[in-house]
Image 1 (cartoon, rainbow, N blue to C red):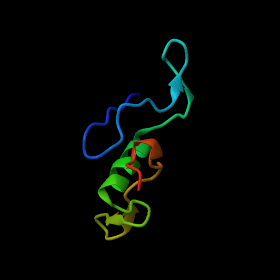
Image 2 (image 1 turned 180 degrees about the vertical axis):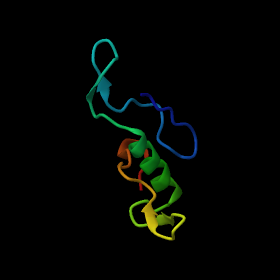
Image 3 (image 1 turned 90 degrees about the vertical axis):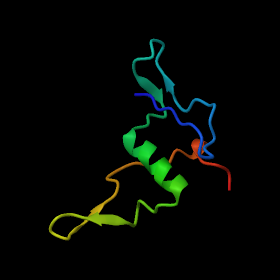
Length: 77
């Protein structure tokens, strides 16, 4: 799976992780959709670890089930 980030103050123009010789399998720093979403939420200032949405019965459901921000893409503070 590949992700392309652009604009919004993200640090772009870099490769994070590595694949095997044929580009089929991640061999270094495997990332997923949760990591992508955590990065976007962090960049937007949304605390995805604490906030939750309510389901139809009013119970809180976490925004993300898994994922950590990709620090290399976030602007330096």
